[in-house]
Length: 280
Image (cartoon, rainbow, N blue to C red; front, side, top):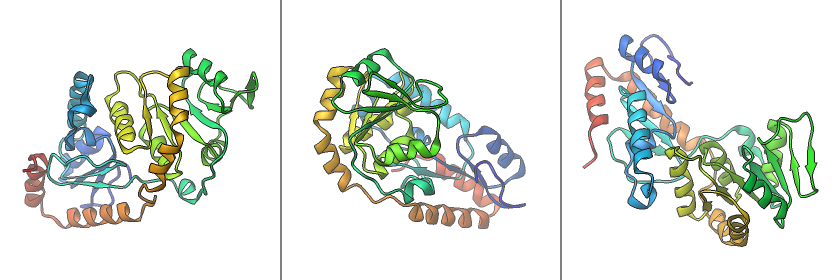
């Protein structure tokens, strides 16, 4: 559906891609923005979430607002629920791949790590009490062991999902998709957001607030040990997390599409004004 006009006089979707907005404006076609990143502009985030990252937040918010400025409706996929700031905004559960929804989670005895390969993290993994299966550090044709505690895994969508399904916990950045998949499969996460990327910082801090894991600036032995020592608490929070599923989110999107397709051009202009208006 991304960036696609459903029919002449239909509806255009955008998941943070500017050309679809230009097309919608030129053709007077209703535009719906679907995705997590619009959370930056459409919701209110408190001081704890913004602490120490105010400038990164302002930049990210300005870019987000400029990317899809003419949408009449915003459907935000999210695992956290801050107050909505602007009209015509709906929060829905994350949309997950069918393979993730079909996966039966098992509580294994390894860490799944998705990282670019920071030296401090690698040193911590070598000393960790749990073995690690690492993706993203090395481009390999097959798995390669490092001292018996760390195994570098080759690129494999099926292999990655299997290692995620059977992991005890996950160490990764603050990317939305993997955080959502880990939550769906009930895996605690040690999230290390990329410096200067407020969207990742936001995701990681809300993850910690929900009790699903921990947000860390860097990972060394102390940070990893503290995270592993709290796994039982994170698992308890995940056990009562909302059940994963796409049905409710897809129904909401369908309702928004049908309503947008039925609106007249004048009504769409009015809806865009409402979408820009702060919620009382």
